Image (tube, rainbow, N blue to C red; front, top):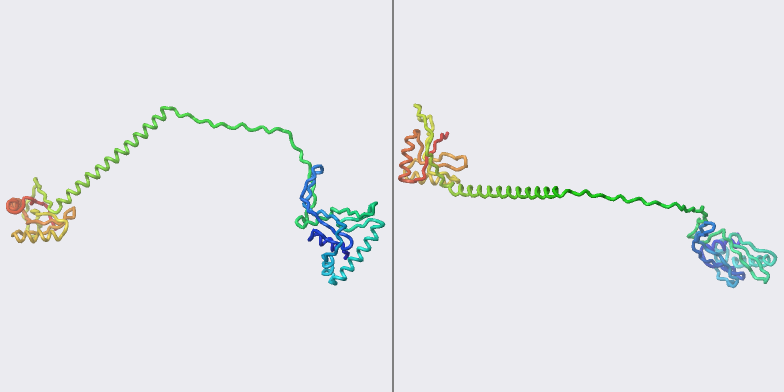
Length: 302
């Protein structure tokens, strides 16, 4: 493997590779560019130049050859020295081509001239990219006709419809307000009535002005329950009803608990009778001596 192959490898990694007693290859980074005449795109690249003044041995090329061929540094240096001697002899008579790098020649003033080769791009970031030529883009002179915007038309609502809608809304609000007011009043009135009923419920007494006519039957009284009751009161709590019974019995009445009415109140009777006439006579006496609020209840309790 010739030293030109080692030089090529090092140009990918370094910006300067020196060949002792011959000169140094120096690279320069060039940005991507477009050739407008040929419509060719050139990717970024490393442009290779040559400097005849760089002849000092920096050891880069010799060390790389020594490690690649597993030889000593001195042996690598001797190999470079032999190649440079051959190049100097050849340049005096003809040009010296170095593969994928460029060529050397002598001018009339006996000066060394380097002509770089552009076939190899030594920039690693552009590896695989090649110059690309595109076809010419022909621009059309045809004018683009803009589309006419579509105007949105708004329908006007007749004035009388607006007024009618306003009146309808106001009437609806008035009706809702009045209905709410009536419902509120009904609730308040019901609450008042309920409160009055609860206040009187402990000592509720009712007088039947026109009791229903009764039919007297000749049957065994022990089998027929008593239907006429002189009521002393109706109580929410059973304990109060029992207290009332004890109170009346202590006064000499034959008081009993009849049961609960449709409002869930426990009813207490002074006495119960089979005949209406007997019940009315007892009611009259009780109103005179004990309570004017006593009243007559006609009902059969089983």
